[in-house]
Image (tube, rainbow over all chains, first blue to last red; front, side, top):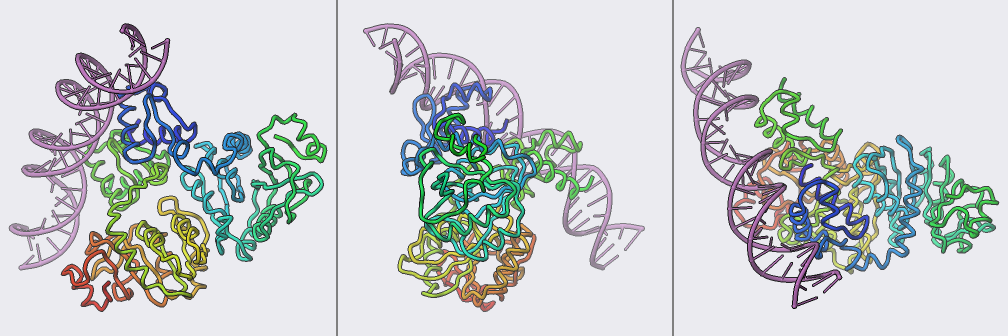
Length: 248
Length: 248
DNA sequence: GTAACTGTTGCATTTTTTTGCCGGAAAAAT
DNA sequence: ATTTTTCCGGCAAAAAAATGCAACAGTTAC
């Protein structure tokens, strides 16, 4: 294993688990702890991790503002993990923006080889760090608040695609009102994505269940799968199951 | 086995496995490791792979190690400052990718209100944090190594725009050979940008002056302004001034 | 034809990088 | 307070890289 590989593996582990132990890393890749310590020092000198006694911490976790504004990170990681298992090699996958989708991008297995189409800058940014997937960005005017492409050009481009899966970062979902949102431009884009996809998967932390916002995106029966961090027999999910949605 | 064959074989291996070992390659094609090392160096100089101790990594792989250490940061900041003064309110500005352009994005004065069009993900990411500018992203397939949109769709979209300024992040510039680069897809995009812009401004740290790479983008007289970190009376810039380029 | 030149390759030598290991210092745990 | 764990600097062996050199094949110029 090359030095750079090792360091990149360490970095992945740190960002995934928020902390690593030198002893674990040493075992996992069968090199001496001294080597690990030296790697940790280099990564720390480059400002990529925070080195502590016995291991290292992710920079975003302990120090930066970012961790605090990725709300309910653990729940989102759970959702991302479930969602990633739906994607098979060779698929065309449409994704919206949002922190849950970013977690999904991070959780994609390294061997996966598929095509991802997105309108979100931060999500695209995650995708390009994956070794095997192909990334298509749908461009147009960029909404500063949502950090995604909005407008007619983007929507007509989306319509030209036939995707296998569409992952929707969901802001509000309710059995009677369906999926709703608050930004008109974003809603237009999401609608186009739903229309052009074979299968629609809504990703929502349980907190978003049974909430409603101003603008309607689609009805609940337009969704094929709903993924939350909850166990799929949780009572909160019963109404959605009854509405014919697949719960994961 | 010819040198070209060998190098294209190496490139295939790198892109397939994300890493190669010099020793393996040496065995596989029965040449000495010295030869392999020389090939690896050439490919690395062309920016096609990342050479590391013991072998090489694919460019997309290495990107997962997000290097925040920008090379020659101070020089680039000087360039960015000079460049930002050319932009006036209401202008349409086309920009390529590259760390120099990112510095330009950071250096934009807060009061500036203009429209920026780009194909680069990291550059767009900077733009959206600016309070007053409008951001248009030209989407298409994303090149993992250059982190910009490449392909026919992007190029035809660029051609539909008439921009006032085009800022070119420049990898190599020479009086007789013009601006050159090493990535074919990126070159196509840059050419389209130059064609459709009123005024073309090349941003280059002095280190890039009088260097040549494989693929030609344009002649020096296609450039209107050249910005480096040097004083505009520096001897290094004389030949370019003589060629009719405005030096800043 | 031949001589000069260029580009490529392998080999020997030197230099650099990487890595594991050791002993003592420092920090954490008990 | 003492025991355990971790850290740090130096050292040495091994691996890899850089360097200089010579052999060789093609090309070009004369």
